[in-house]
Image (tube, rainbow, N blue to C red; front, side, top):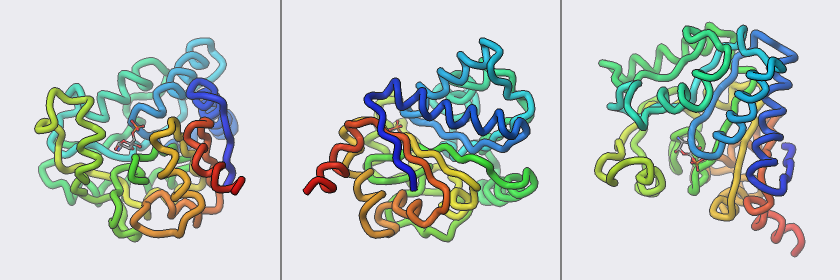
Amino acid sequence: MRIIECADYKSMSRRAAGIIAAQVVLKPECVLGLATGSTPVGAYGELVKWCGQGDLSFAGVRSVNLDEYLGLAPTHEQSYRRFMQENLFDHIDIVPENTHVLNGLAENPETECAQYDELIASLGGIDLQLLGMGHNGHIAFNEPGDDFGLGTHVVSLSERTIDANQRFFASRDEVPRHALSMGIKSIMGARKILVVVSGADKADALCRAVSGPVTNEVPASVLQLHPDVTIVADSAALSVLKAGESR
Ligand code: GLP
């Protein structure tokens, strides 16, 4: 596991974008696993900029997103499909049909999940999976206690995640209680994993994920078992880990 420390959110975003760009340059037809949440927004902004300048092309890239709220239409303001359109897809030269996000309105969510795992396999697997991390160490929507052996599945969101995500909705009641999410097994199948973490409020979870025991109580701790993980974090997010190392 490589940990790259950056001074602040902006430099973390640039560094993460550089790693994604390197993947696209080295393998223009790669499969990118993409993430939502506020943390990757800055990195997406850099990619949009480089693409606009003609320095990078996503014309051959295929993408699969980690998760989607159950019950939200792709056009809903807070759907992850819309997030991806607004923060990345609408501003780069990726072919729309090559972007894949789980359908939150699927008639049969279980079938949607099974088909998503088949889709990932048919694309040849994920070359680079981008991840953010929740305050409780969740990755995608794999909450503490979830089974590490699961592929894409329907999840119940934890109270802490509902609290954290209510800032995007008019009220807490409007936050969906369920989501479709790639599982830990699907994520661990990616050839490379890139994690972005920012802010002191994530420092405790990051420390537990990186230096604590591998346990499904801290879903991100499973990444210790993956052979190619890069964490790009700002100094605030690394503060608890570094305080432990200097003790
Ligand atoms: C949501 C997403 C995760 C994301 C997490 C953290 O729960 N499903 O993929 O990593 O939020 O989001 P943020 O980056 O806004 O802190």
